Length: 264
Image 1 (cartoon, one colour):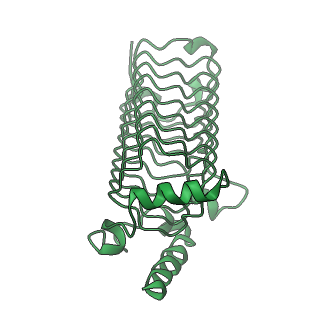
Image 2 (cartoon, rainbow, N blue to C red):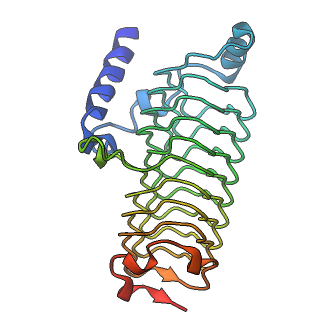
């Protein structure tokens, strides 16, 4: 069984090493398989591991934790790289500084979770619930398509594409059709991010970097934009209504498809 798990982990890691596949893994993996849908342990066993660790970070890399209720546990600094957390409950869980790189967290519930400074590089989190979660300064180069981040804190989150390496430039925050109503994204780097059809009503984007981001069809009604940079952002069909601090934003006159946006 160990060799089977190792083979799966190696296979996933190999696939994720390819830039184009890193955020489009859905077609490569059987999500109904035990490896993806069933847990290999229990909450009680994880609690025992936390107790035995005596304050040291847990190594849960590659573990199958799908469907478990891990709400409220202390998993700060834990290594969850390549872990499977599909439909797991992590409500209020402390994941401060945790590593969730290449993890699977489809439809996982992170309501109120602490993810400050965590790394979510290439994490697959489509349909996840992160209502009022704290992702401040998190590395948010993840696929959160269709997720709910209402009221979440993403201050200084790092979701921009790394254009120093063109192959890595294909990997960026994917926030398609997400709910970010009332979220705090002040100072966040979402440059070249995918936010098409996202709901950003009343969101705080003060000082955020949205250079080259795809905001087509997004709803920014009442969003705060003071100090934000939108140069090259695609706003085709976007609702730019009742914006706050737009006069102090940068690059609003250099967006793409500005004539196709809905304005006051």
